[in-house]
Length: 63
Image (cartoon, rainbow, N blue to C red; front, side, top):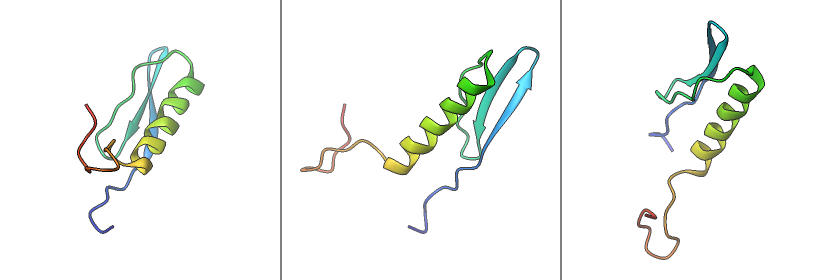
């Protein structure tokens, strides 16, 4: 799709915390473990790839 947003993930450290960030504007929570920040980023990418949660019959967003 031409209107899909490119998702480029990075991590940033601030003191003893690490945060995952995406070029689409998403930010994960501050984590003490870099591995957990990377896991947050992987989940974000998987959610972005799956698209919005919609009802398969009506196409309407799930509430």
